[in-house]
Image (cartoon, rainbow, N blue to C red; front, side, top):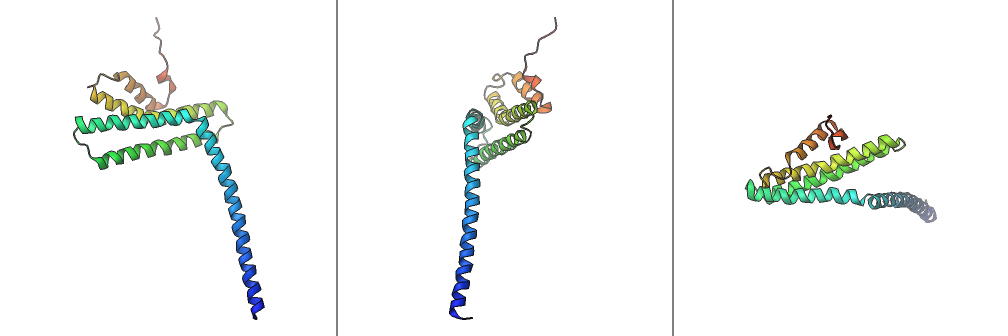
Length: 171
């Protein structure tokens, strides 16, 4: 092979690589822009849900820190950070999974709304119940009333929304 053939093969090879790089970058760029705008819209329209779930995690963290530092007297920073990270991670991961599950059947409005509501309740009740248990330890069972924890336990057992309804006694 002469120098001209080597040079032309080298240029063709590099141009093919550049073309493939441009094509793949374009595809990734379009996907990223579309995906990021979808995520951004979801965050904006669900800011209240995200705030409440994170608020419950933060409240549980603060109350749990007080319980382990002053009541159980077994506080360790490493376990504190590990527990917080696990709870936050579980809330985020399960929140994403439940939202995705609900969106799988978005065409069925009633089922979609039910799954979305139940999924969000499951995600929020996990840290909220833990915060209530910590509060109960701090107040020696006075606050919150035990019935609140029983409502959450009933919901966790069968996922029935009836546990949150006002029950009227037959007269």
